Length: 219
Image (cartoon, rainbow, N blue to C red):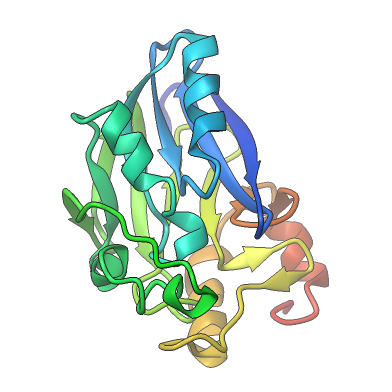
């Protein structure tokens, strides 16, 4: 596990009405960024990119629920060359307002179709940052998390899998608490305790903290 660690910046933009965390991620000194799960406030993300002089290399979705992809269309319009990346199991949700749950809330939202589908075992390099893809379904059928191993400590872009003191809801279509718990134990628990998890809602946490104290999945 040698090699030089990479210094990255992660800026959180909380998007209402679901208090969803969108993240802008870039290398220190870099001019390209990627956005994770652009929600209902894409203008705030675009404004931040402009203020920092960053161009958008990709739109990276952890899963297909509306609060995590409502901003995809606006981001794609502003940066047409930026691919939309999502797990293969949630691809249909982007373009289907019933599957992505927006129709349930009375305001159908869709995204342009994904440009790139990912699954466990895939490794991407986006804006000069390496991302390892892991499948952790249970909150949604095709939910993926992205590991950035080059940082010290390791960084997990976790979506709605593991929260500080909680886990993602499993009462949506295709959800399963048993599946989610098994995925957390398989993928996240073996990581070093200081691994930082950036969740889809709420404050950042660490693998060690949740492994010790999380009321749903602690060991």
